[in-house]
Amino acid sequence: MLRRIPLLAIGTVLVVAALSTGLSFLFFLVYLGVFVGLGSYVVTRLGLTDLEAGFAVAQVHGHVGDQLRATVTVRNAGRLPKLWLETYNPSNLPVPLPGRALSLGPRSQRTWNAKVPLTRRGHFRVDALQVRTGDPFGFFESVASVGHGVSVVVYPRVERLPHWRIPTANLEGSHASRERALQTTPLATSVRPYAPGDAFNRIHWKSTARHGEIQVKEFDLEQTADVWIFLDLDAAVQAGAGDRSTVEVAVRAAASIAEKALAENRAVAVTTNGHHPATLPPDRGPRQRHKIMQLLAAVEGDGPAPLAEALIVTLPRVRRGTTAVVVTASDEPEWVRPLATLRPRGLGCIVVQLDAPSFSVPAAPRGAPSDRPPASPDPEAEQAARAIRHRLAEFDLRTVVVRADDRLGEVLG
Image 1 (cartoon, rainbow, N blue to C red):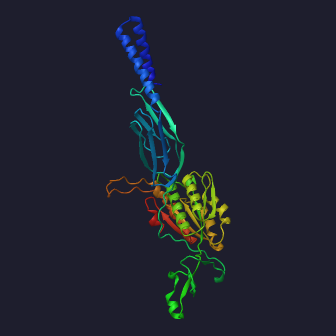
Image 2 (cartoon, helix red, strand yellow; image 1 turned 135 degrees about the vertical axis):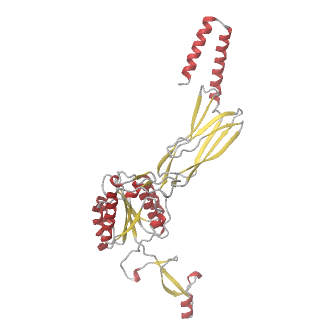
Image 3 (tube, helix red, strand yellow; image 1 turned 90 degrees about the horizontal axis):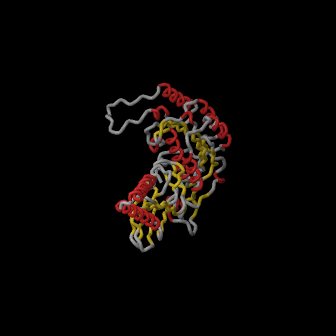
């Protein structure tokens, strides 16, 4: 409409001048303008007739670092060519899906794939496909919305932790109470005579030679400890910005630990103390993984309450044989004392301590000279971080320190 105001003003002046002077040249310009305007309007109105379009998103969830792929198809079912079309999907993705300008001949179609990297975790929206056309002069345009929007959930990046170990549960009960496993597990506990249907790879050849008849191994279900992850999202203890922040590294560490524990057939629970505190009860399997990743995709470091309150409220619910994994950047000593009561109750504990002072130091720019002295963190913050690690060592709590530029796969091992 803003583009049309000057054109309407010029057209009005031209009509008034032609009627006032009666010059044939001015009437020619008036007729030409009317012809161009009507022609542009008709071309725009017919631009989307007999047009079919659609799009499909390959996956509605993925991890940071993956690619989001969408397939777009535009088909001209009419006999007139479509000289100018523009397609795009409005979205709030960090990197939006790219649009495309194209033209279609009579009874032809175009199909292409649009790919964008997923650079930030969160819940996002990809709106319906927009198809736009107009006239060559830009006087008019016509837009059609095709299909329905979809929600895309981007999970945090999961690091491989090949050397991360959580102790097995110290379960009570005799050997006779253990549950036999039909599949092969690391716990081969006894042998028995061969029975029809036993797999050949379960034959124990040394016992077979000793007994003079075929003996096969029996396996027990592996006794693993449940894992309860406490993710500290207290806004007062966070440092850094973007991917190089304590919030993002803590979420990535929690996601990686949960993925590792679920792969080991452990039951995993998660407690967060963000602006909307959340607790997922312990469970195992793909369904629990989906719940955990959905939660971690949405959390932010905006919690109003300290970690100590979340531990005091939740730790009484943690049952015997569980390992508590605390992921925090806090250097306040109040949250250490609740963890000191876990060992007498038969609970394990591992603290993933994020070194907040290192996240406050800006990263060195690429290409900077190597002899350039690194920036120093705040001495008081550095002293508080050392004090909290010393306090954890006093209670014999296993601690893993993660600094800003560390690789989680190496450090957590």
